[in-house]
Amino acid sequence: MLSNWEKINAVQRMQEYIMAHYREEITLQDLAKAAMYSPWHSLRAFSELMGKTPFEYLRMVRLSAAARKLRNTSTSILDIALESAFGSHEGFTKAFSREFAITPQEYRKRAPPLRLFSYYPIRDYYKLFEGGKEVMSDMVVFTQVIERPKRKLILKRGIRAAEYFAYCEEVGCDVWGILESIKGALQESIGVWLPENMRVPGTSEYCQGVEVPVDFSGEIPDGFDIIDLPACKYMVFQSEPFEDEKFGEVISTVWNAVKRYNPKHFGWDWAPNDGPRFQLAPIGARGYIEGIPIREYKGEGSQNIQNYY
Image (cartoon, rainbow, N blue to C red; front, top):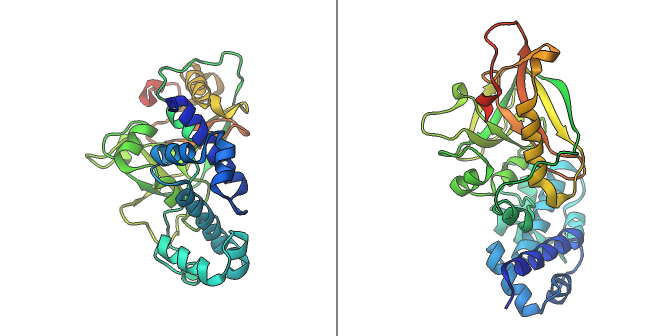
């Protein structure tokens, strides 16, 4: 019998193997070797923690990668099918249509929002529930000011969520994949903390969304809203690159740096009503990134960072 963390680490190794080899043929023996357990234990552990078999997971990885190629390239559908480890155009079309309720040909024409796969390491999910995170006192946090033009935000609202995992419990963890499928996005998908003036009564402070141009005319996914965002400046905080398993400590470190930061020393003040505070997905190779709206400091009516925490 596998202990809880043995199962988590075994499933993590299978996830990593699938992400590295999804363009190739993958057998249960391959996954068991990656997990370092028997095929039976590996299959059972994956299905228990992920809510689907490893081959259902693999199919979603392959089909989502294919959807992105259909949307972003002119590669032929047959070549995309073969690159995605499907043996034929017909088999790929059948699997794609069953998964997304649209044919590859029609998706290439219209590129409507789809529920695409979004990779999330299972080990990271469980690490967040180990308790409070330590602050990494030796880590450098960089700052820079950026300007964002007028734009719109397509978002999925929650109910009461004030952070990522409460949000996932309310609306599910697959919102990110839908956002990534929206054609015409200005940037990558973001987590946002909405100011009071951008919330709808009875909905959450924390949401997930993606910014699009002011003149965006594409399809809005069912159950999502689109709101206007004014032009504003942001103070962006970015950690050093980090080992992926340290992401919880890194986020805590950046939040601690934000709390201690006094923007008035540099001619700025917090502007919590000018736009949403945002976070990008924590990726070890680039560091954790978070942005907070600011405006020029006028010397009176200074805003407190506690508005954000």
